[in-house]
Amino acid sequence: MATILRDWSYRYQWLYDSISRLAAFSVGGETRFRKLALQDLIIHSDTQVLDLCCGSGQTTQFLVEFSQNVTGLDASPKSLQRAQQNVPLASYIEAFAEEMPFADNLFDVVHTSVALHEMQPQQLRKIINEVYRVLKPGGVFTLVDFHAPTNPIFWTGISLFLLLFETETAWELLKTDLVGLLTENKFKVSQPILYAGGSLQVIQAKK
Image (cartoon, rainbow, N blue to C red):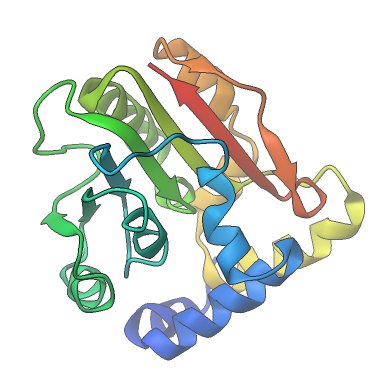
């Protein structure tokens, strides 16, 4: 169960940013962390990109360096306001990830960064279905999120982080087979790449 630090981190941008930088230290810093799910992707200036659950635009800022057609979606008006200020080159939509107001087969790339662990199991399944729907045939869903550590040394760190800042859904994700869920939804999934002793996973799945 999360502490009051979770509420404060969403209320105060400086605290959220500090926590993000601290959490990203294990993979070489905030910039490298935000680019983990973007590795090996081919993104051109006209590539249609959706930054799903974009938050304050932490990864959106890197996506707009490649494409002129980046859309950020988030359910939080406060986060979207910050994203608009931080990354004005993208367009933004306020909506829930499980009910996206987009046409079928619209995006070439859908990206999400440490957001799926916030979702209840049924929400997660709906989101995966929605991502498949809005992706063009051959489009890629790329994500980075928590994973049960494969190196026992990292269990203490991730456990403390989840206790302080996350809810039971994050613990649930550690037990969830994301590759299996994506495969069930007709995605062709590459082998996950693990970082930070296995406590982070990057998955790229193709429609």
